[in-house]
Length: 195
Image (cartoon, rainbow, N blue to C red; front, top):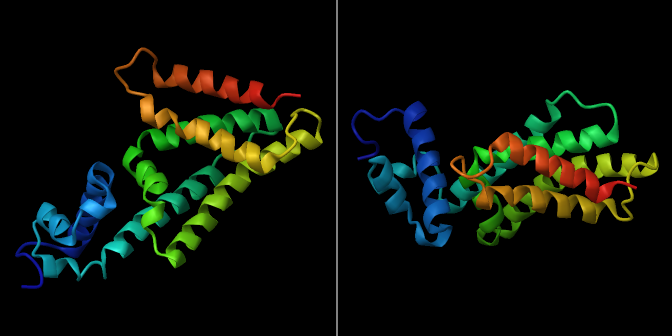
């Protein structure tokens, strides 16, 4: 049986990706089999291969889509004119974008070790492209004498790690609203680089 009766590729394909994303984030890539993903979606395991060649392709596709969409979304922002405002814009964007994509963020950071070397290289290129967006802001601010950043590459990685960390602790039901967190973090980022 190639496909469960009543399934449609335009519906089933996204359901497979959603199930894989959720299960990889909850249980870890190594603990999730193709059989478990198929069961979650209501397919026979053999039918799953009509949508993806293997589990590695699923993981890679999820990570690649996340990173590509992240860079596209950032570049779609109307850029602030000055480096300081642009830096704060980046901080707010990063937190807001990732806030509603916790599973994708978790996988993008925690499952890198499970990528094949070829797939890892592709994801690293995407990550570097995103880090370079922040690095350029820091370099421009340093050149203008606004930022004191001796190594913009290291600073960009450190700031991104700090901003991404919000996903590990922020909850809508917590003491602070997302808007308050955005204000605090954009101010912290500003203070971290000012000359």
